[in-house]
Length: 274
Image 1 (tube, helix red, strand yellow):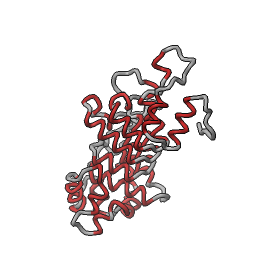
Image 2: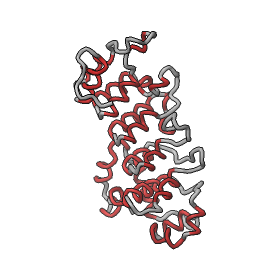
Image 3: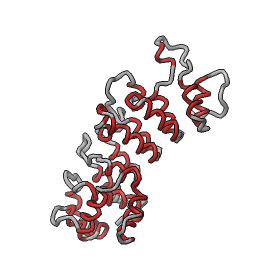
Image 4: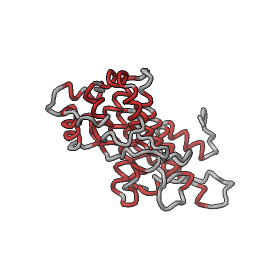
């Protein structure tokens, strides 16, 4: 809920206002541990937990405070706020939140943190949220919202392109959206990034690709179209870029791509799609 003016007598309001204003980390942490749920019976519920605080840090893009929380409370900060008493995070709640609000810097920090903690190493491939329970991963969500840079980051960090509970893969999500030509550039970029990392397997859309061959071959090009039907191997340019990307640090991806001694046309794949 938006707060126009904080209530000076309410620590909860002051915390949210300070987060919105990107106040220093020390001030944020002082406000976080102040009692604000005075009607709660359990003492531990009277404070913002690290997972609650990270939720607000993502919403307001408070990068320094998000970094502090992930360094000091690696496991607790990534628990689902509503399920913060669970020992293990069952959903990639904060990762999904970063994708929804387009927060690439915090998303990278969360993934880096999860990779360093034994209990969180599968975090990137957990379901994005506990409601609705549909089996969709953060990669599904990034494709659904057409966030090609976030799709690329997730793939570089090892996100799996697995089917959801309805059997739809992230690539199916993009192909379904490609039936309309709005936001075509973003859709093609997402598909291009998926093809660089994941083979077109388990596609629900493969029948549609065959039945509407003229539309899809014109849109995708002959080589990519045949590859998605598994009639030809992946194009050489696709295989080459996949090998190159596997050697780059995901945390500084675009800078690394720009510094590569490769033709400009290959670098432009990441800004212009095919």
